Length: 92
Image (tube, rainbow, N blue to C red; front, side):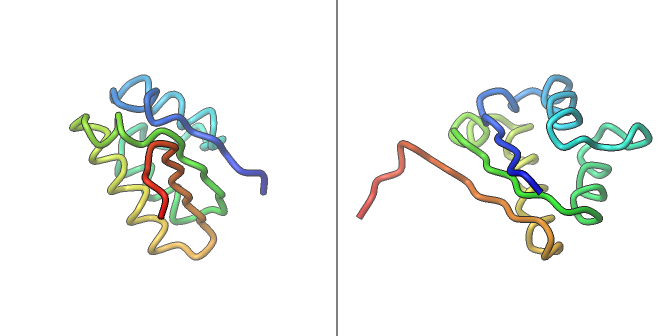
């Protein structure tokens, strides 16, 4: 499966974030368009997600919940790879 690139700055608000995720991850028409349903989809499929620019998510209440869902799903599903790419992170 090809990597899905997501920009954290575009995922801070519920409605536009869920619409963007639906398209980017090719979620099925029947998914519930909420974070519980996103978790269900992520734990049932195969995904390689590259999350770029995570700082805006960490500053947004919805973004914080989304990060938790992505992390939890990645721990539960061995077929889900989540890479968080932070250009601003200090390198050793």
